[in-house]
Amino acid sequence: MCELFAMSASEPHTVRYELDLFAQEGGEKHRNRDGWGILFAQDRDAFLFREPDPAASSELAKMVVRQDRPCRHLIAHVRRASAGKPALANTHPFDRVVRGQRIAFAHNGDLPNIQTCEDAPALIGQRIGDTDSELAFLMLLHRLAAANATTPLDRHDVFARFASELRELGSANFLFFDGELLFVHADRRKFETEDGLTDPREPGLNIRSFEGRHSGQTWTTRGAKIENITAPLHLFASVPLDENGWEPLARGCVLVLKDGAILARAQT
Image (cartoon, rainbow, N blue to C red; front, side, top):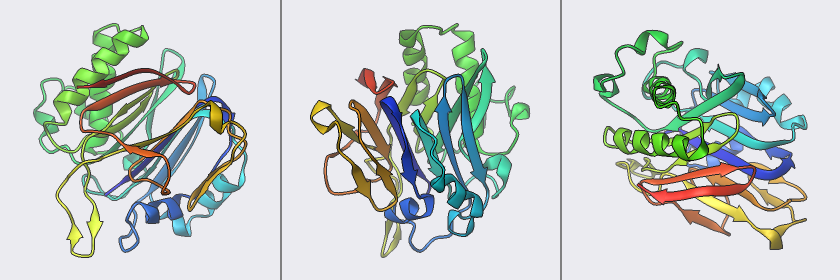
């Protein structure tokens, strides 16, 4: 059971993001984690930090939290290995460079039988690791290139069709940053209870939006902090990180954001 977190903001913000505490808020109090990763997008490049070990015992994770890396877009992932062994190559976010821009992808869920998709066999050999998530990333890149999807609308259409197809295979909560736009797809996820993990159910992702009236405020919760908010700013998380302002996203909800502005929101 992995945990996702993302931000899209109108101005660069510093996010104090303690991955291990965040994972605990997501229901991972009693389960070992199998890696973590966080990407701070900056112009055409990004700071990307990943480890296949628990954040709780990571000196690198502590260093990441201490440093100021203002950004408009952020993607973070805390991994619970379900497909693919704990290894750096299997740690999200996955990244590539396309058209001179660093792009990234993170996934929460399981996609059994993804190898049966028509375009999957030719892409399996291009994976660095062996996860269904990285294969999904490569499939999305292949479809964007095949469609020559250069405009935001074209990319949205390709992403929405892709997400609709893959959620029929299993849980498919996706965060995808293409160097300019943040794409979000909500599906279902497993929840940890006293009786163990549930079957996948909604919501797979939640959104919290900060509008004009929130400008200048500080948002603080266990595991994350953002000071002096300049709205609009939107956060996404696998589970609400505090008691205020979070909206569950229905299965099949697709959003496209650029610098804090929601360009598209659709139910697919």
